[in-house]
Length: 324
Image: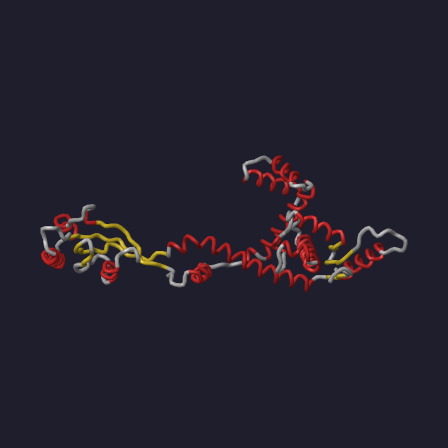
């Protein structure tokens, strides 16, 4: 491969600089059996002028605006393209134009338009349809290559995502407690004193400790205006209670009752019907986006490493007299 590539490079140089011949194009670099021509720089600049058909994954520590001004960055971009194309051929990952047409149809379907309308939009942006199809072909081939070589090997665990989440939410917990509770409520009405209501609540609590059923005593004594059978209050996550209620609930096991708890609503006796740990709902909501960000970050890092390893393995010859 190295001898063959070097032979291409040498012959092409001789053809480009034949005495008396008009210089039409010039080889700037050879990457395995692929070549980078001077005209490739102009084609790249044309693409950059409209920010179209640029593979941003190949922008090495730069952006499109910077790429348009930096000859060295342009050369690196073009070499990276040739490295990918070389690997596509080596691994036999080339696709047919039928696959390109299918991609256009799928693109049209996602946007609820026809394939003809997609191509019309391409023309409206000043792009040649054949050039656009070649761009799609290259993109599909490179995506298949990167999926096989890099993307399929990226692993982002839930712990990775949660660690990233904690950077912006340092007080968050990976899981929170969820409690299902029932209550017997004793309200302090105008014709009663707090002490008398507390005494009544304490009496009911003593009956519960002697073994009487919570459901029956709730039915008989609870003054909850939204009373549900059995005194069911609902399911709540840690942090959704008042401090007094949560502290009391945390002290008991499922099936037990609290001692009398005083709040602004009155006096309560709570029964813990169920308790379990659930994932932090705020983290769960953000996890897909965080995971996607980490995958993209890891992809960029692994792509850079992969491209460098391919450069080290490949035949690479540069003869760019305009390089600064």
